[in-house]
Length: 252
Ligand SMILES: NC(=O)c1ccc[n+]([C@@H]2O[C@H](COP(=O)([O-])OP(=O)(O)OC[C@H]3O[C@@H](n4cnc5c(N)ncnc54)[C@H](O)[C@@H]3O)[C@@H](O)[C@H]2O)c1
Image (cartoon, rainbow, N blue to C red; front, side, top):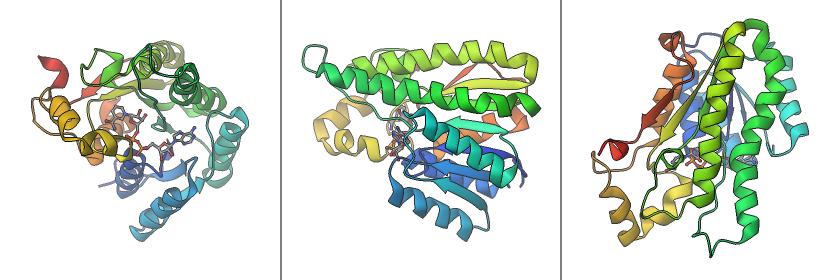
């Protein structure tokens, strides 16, 4: 059970639901983890949980990935502690929702900054390390990048995640000569800190879950296991791909 033995894996948003699940899943497989989050408390808890498993993890918090300098500090931490970067899992993001005529214009810009620019920023900073030995970039997109979801007013989220999806294909092209693979995961509905509100609203929750073949939201661990696959050599011939992890939401 060491599918990521001694791989240096940078995971963003490790204070969040999927980021924390990924840190634990990667640690169980022998990874050396570099986490970060803009919110400190939960990120520190994740470090404690990984260490309790016998895993190795360092983490930078608060770390706001919309700030290029913070991204540089995160990459420096990885190199200083573990010598390189093998895997970059861009999981962290924050979305703001609202219909086109009701969402404040500033929320549009915040979503693009906090869902798209932060991914670019960290890739830009980590690229010089990744090209040295090759590696795997995993970017979290969303089913909203691929199709409209009637109950969710996801205009800015769809735009940002659509861009993450498109950008990742291009990264796969640019990374291939260096042995860098780049893929996206597109989750459907996942029960996380960010969906507590919608899942707590019975009408909204029913409308969203009615569209899912499996009839329930995903657990964060069900996304983390796919990230683990994309980080490992088991996916060595997969690049430029998008893996939909949506319980069948987009299949009908
Ligand atoms: N929950 C869903 O249904 C769903 C569906 C599709 C895609 N996603 C995507 O999954 C990923 C994980 O989200 P989640 O649902 O686990 O949410 P979450 O809120 O539990 O975790 C996200 C974490 O990212 C951190 N973060 C946000 N902006 C940051 C920044 N600028 N710098 C550093 N850290 C920052 C947050 O503090 C948080 O801890 C996100 O990219 C999200 O867009 C979620």
